[in-house]
Length: 124
Image 1 (cartoon, rainbow, N blue to C red):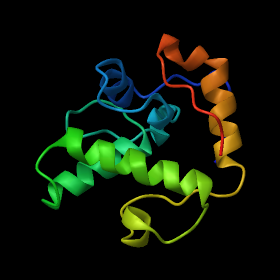
Image 2 (image 1 turned 60 degrees about the vertical axis):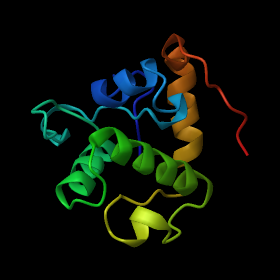
Image 3 (image 1 turned 90 degrees about the vertical axis):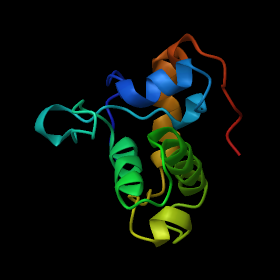
């Protein structure tokens, strides 16, 4: 997924990260314009937050917060094992990553100075 280095962060996952409920690495960029999904809260969001909304709608977990943590964990696995049919990706509920996405994501986080939050991890 090609991302602009100065893309705005998704407000939904950034709020969870600021509250200490989501790892900063899991914060995703907000897609531009009409490409940005609209979440259940009627706010534009990233694809991972939209996937979390789907997980809640399917009653897999009861809250958005729980679902967003799960999509964040699966995204982190996808960055390290691009395209592997694990977890929500294997179930068709989360977009798979491709090789290079993790490097691009880290560059985006670095350009955003990790939003002033703790949580910068070494790439493994």
